[in-house]
Length: 162
Length: 89
Image: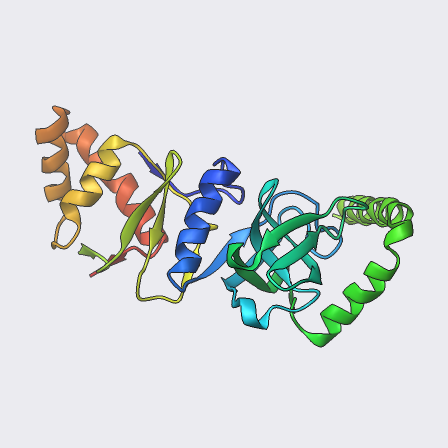
């Protein structure tokens, strides 16, 4: 009759984001789980995030935003700011970029929660770390493969210890 | 007991989320699967004081089920309402 949901709502992305955007437009903050690894390693599948309504005047390079792009509604990072347009890319992507107009940016990620950890995604430190990661975009494929392997090994070790 | 005031049930695909309009933050990690009878019951109980017996009576009238069956569903539902912090006394 009535059961509480799971970590990953079994709802199509477009339907889910419709509600997220509606709430953001009402001025609400959103806490939600992330699906997918396009923002790996900074946001991973299953991480929880705090999204706040975006103010286009205060958007900066390195902000992680929820925006409507040519490929649909996505949560990616601002890598370029033009007059009325932003260019977005996933931290875990090596080449693909997306475009959105400023009025189609709905929310900005402020906090990322992973297990017992939480960090400010909009802090100077976070941005600096991202800047370093962005510089290495040409060799990101290699770095990603290494990090993913390391993540897998860490998880296997943790499971063996239990 | 009663359902907390001003909670809104919002349809998301085939599921529902509970929104507290006075709160600044909407928790989209809590998504509820409600069937038709649960939604109906929620709407009947919203804004009024009720007991488990009253809930069971509503279900019995609407769905022609036995008292035992109705109470069984009611107790499950109340447990979930309480666990999720949706009820106040």
